[in-house]
Image (cartoon, rainbow, N blue to C red; front, side, top):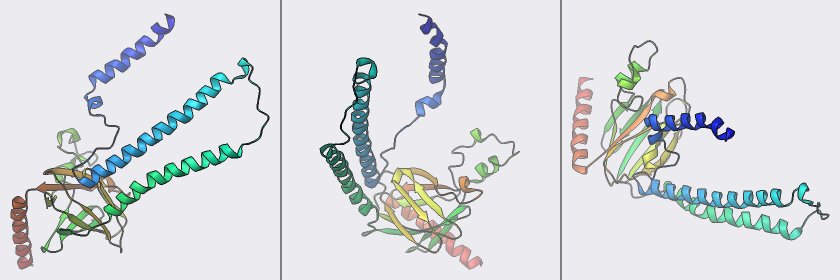
Length: 273
């Protein structure tokens, strides 16, 4: 009874925090399936590996707890006289090896698919800079920079007087989003112009390093229209945390309209120069 009274205030405090804070309802402790077939395959692979590890952990710790309880000194347990067993050593070597092979086969298959850019319908060159992104639609003659949106850039500065909570999608919005059509295999040629960056959009299951002087290839095919956000995932300098990624997936007709407007802007700038 005394122990109950001792822990009652702690239990009430935890209960109050979980019920009062809306953040607990948004807490996610797992990966999300995403909006591409590849991202869902990565999710399934992750879950398969997780449950295999859970089964192994339960088995190993179960045997440990059983041995601790049933073979303790107070129950009169006597230490064994043998030093080792070749049979047991072979078993605990072969079984983990087979498990690793069984896990490696689907993982290797998925990795090969992630690098297979054949059949792409749209190619975009992505260049990471300190601290923004440059997008080149290689076959369409469109090029632009994507930078942290001005309101967020102003709010992040010390002494700005702006409450970041009043800025929508704080640090996750840009002035020029990457726009792609839905149900289209998009090939990205990812590189860097100064230091190593990383182009990462979780909803697509895509994370690719942007290495200066080297071009990495990756692809995605978004099956759902919408706006998807990511960030630079490689520490690249002072403003690393302020170069978000925004991808807008539209219908094919909307994409054609957007592309035409971008071509007009590009030609106007070229004439002005």
